[in-house]
Length: 262
Image 1 (cartoon, rainbow, N blue to C red):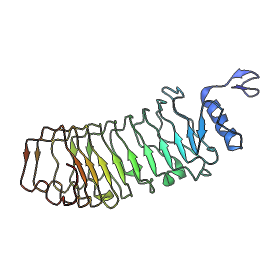
Image 2 (image 1 turned 180 degrees about the vertical axis):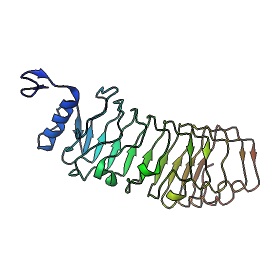
Image 3 (image 1 turned 45 degrees about the vertical axis):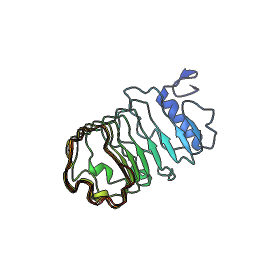
Image 4 (image 1 turned 30 degrees about the vertical axis):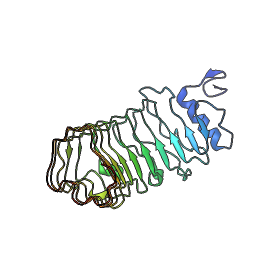
């Protein structure tokens, strides 16, 4: 892509500016199927693997989005910034993937944040779940923070929200505070905590009446205490293998009346 004015006729366009021009052209009604560097299909704007190593997208770069965009993929770009500006006209945006970047915080997308139902941040550098960052995602149902640097889940980590799917696998979690999931207990259906460093589960951790699948594979749990899973009234599948469990105390599985797979 070359720009006829502004940078000089025939001068190469920097990659970030090229992306901005592409998005603006798409918003004006021009097809993007054959455009570079992004591609689009069936509502997905794919801006992954743009080789933006060590860079942040300038404010306004993704404003406005292509008309009809419902999903945005910015994965594999080594992006650092967590504060984005996307035009509020793209009210249809529901899914955002920013996997394999270098984010240290949960990103913010301006007014559109409240519309997003799926946020995937796999393989980033998030070390803490900060409730103030999540509370803006009032429609969020699916959150994937696997393969980050999170070390603990506090009782205050999650604000009240309507999450259904939560993946925290492959982090560095050693501590689950009692009641750490209470603020999302009314909606959670699937919880994954595989490949962490959890050695004990405090009582009242899993008061999650609608959860059907709970995974705790490849942790460091040796003993399952009595009533550990009390409150998982709808649980159908509990996965605990590769923990080295040596003792199940009396009542360890009490209350799991609907469980089909252990």
